[in-house]
Image 1 (cartoon, rainbow, N blue to C red):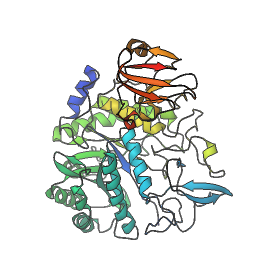
Image 2: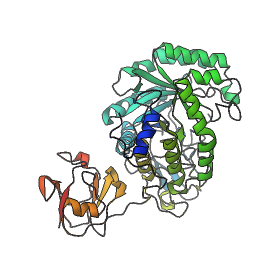
Image 3: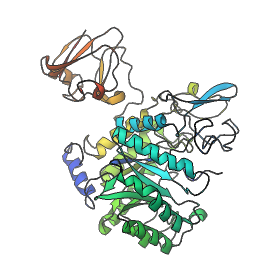
Image 4: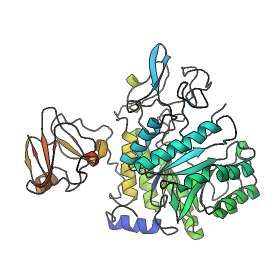
Length: 497
């Protein structure tokens, strides 16, 4: 088998500029589960022998799924951080234990959706390739696992059909929706936009041999799904509007039939200059055409191919967040969440070569000399999403630190859970009123996590001058939401001893 490709708003606008952007962004449709939201592409396509998956192999870990991954038999170009998974699967690479996760384990999917919850990923687009072959039973099971995780962690999800190489797509996609996937729309976690269940079809109009569907066939499928009451997103070529380069000519009526357009970007840019080129020559023109036709616009944001050295420790990804927010897009699609095969994943990834089996040649997040925490691109997505939603100021300067301080010099409060977002100054032992905290970069009702040095005690107060509800912490606390009562965004004053 061969790999296919790759792979309302919570607050008022932070600035008048952001408010204007949001007003523009919702011109076609009001906020929903994809408009005004950060969506991540979710492959869910990794399996290991012994995990119970019907496919019974090293699914997408190896080129030959019957054999474990090795330097000569690998399908991945990035190595995952597996510390948060209760079950992993070991094999040997150059004699060293090498642990991997299985998407078939419910705990793995739950962990992924918990990461989404913690980092502002609102909606997951579950990739569904041709399910009529040997992969079908495993993919069917993955849909049920994603539903469970989305419901548990308060995320939304929708089915994203990939038409690549699907010979009988026209009839079989309809049958699959009718007989299997439409049942998932009964879930409270299934994404809806304009009151309609969301479906995405990726691959129409691409100028590639394995996507040679006539325009008439594409229109038939789109209109059929719309006839089923669906809001239909099109995963379309980058140059869909002029109908050249990666797009077949003569498909503009196909593209205009979609409710939302999400042009593909993987492999299109590798640096900030490329991102700016698309901002000036593609994104603004795309948005204008979508506005003229009442279509929502959801361009891709990519972290960059880690193995090729494109990421620039987050600068490439942040530039896209900044540019697309300026454009006034209706939504953003992160390509991808768990795409370790093409190195465009935002999921937790090996921080350094010490985490990667020797001899693989796989680069870690510090490949350009900048140390990055394994969750850095999740945190970056969170901050980019906040800017897009008007919850943080529009800024060309990346606010996310690649490697958060460990707090050895004092107590450090963080804006987001898991020590993400902005960080306050390290606080020495003492008492801090609201004004004193603000002077140290800790805003009122702002903190969501804290690093506490060993042996120290922090008492958090909900009121100024050490009044109101209190919480006492004697160790690092990654998520104030989990405290009882919920302490998230409640800090106003504190005592440190």
